[in-house]
Image 1: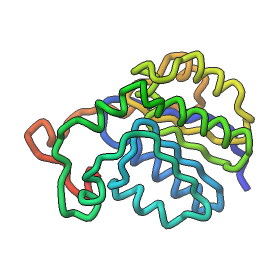
Image 2: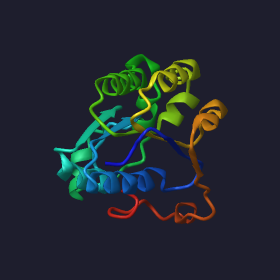
Image 3: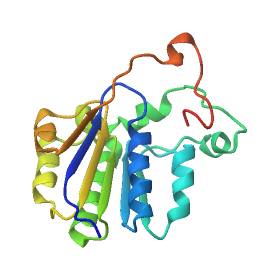
Image 4: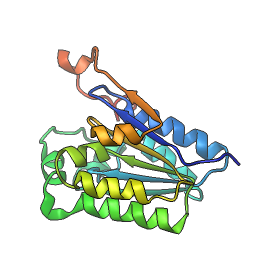
Amino acid sequence: MASYGLIHVYFGDGKGKTTAVLGLILRALGRGADVALIQFMKGSTYSGEIYSLSRFSSQLQHFKFGWTCPRSAMIKSGEAKCQKCGQCFQENRDPRYGFAKAALRKAGELMAAGTCQVMVLDEVGNALRRGLISEAEFLDFLNSRDGNTELILTGRTMPKKVLEQAHYVTKVAAVKHPFKDGVDSRRGIEY
């Protein structure tokens, strides 16, 4: 089995950070690693790639910490589309719910238990940017980790101190996207 313990960061304003990380998850699962995927500020489950990963339940622990759209089951089935109401974004940003703090707490528990070789903290950068968890709290988590778990972080932004601790840093830039031309997100492509 490979040695683990490095930190990866995927950040930027471009599309595909989570999708790229899911490719890394598939590679790790294919090589027999146990993986934990912790999603900050995401509660709905209609993303096609997440649905596909559910087939690896024996090796993959998946936790979503966020508000769930009441239409998510219909969106997943193709019977409805996202109405772009923005409620999921508003609710996930509300610190009263404590979604981000609960996600970081779960990450700490899993790290302490040593139950995975690869851990993904999806959208943790956005939780940090919005102040839903403090940079100090997150740096404490990074500094207390066991060093035997590969840690992958995503988000539009990432604090400089986190980037300095990372071993891999990938910036995903938005160069061109059909959304700006009025093309809606498409099932099987964007979700």
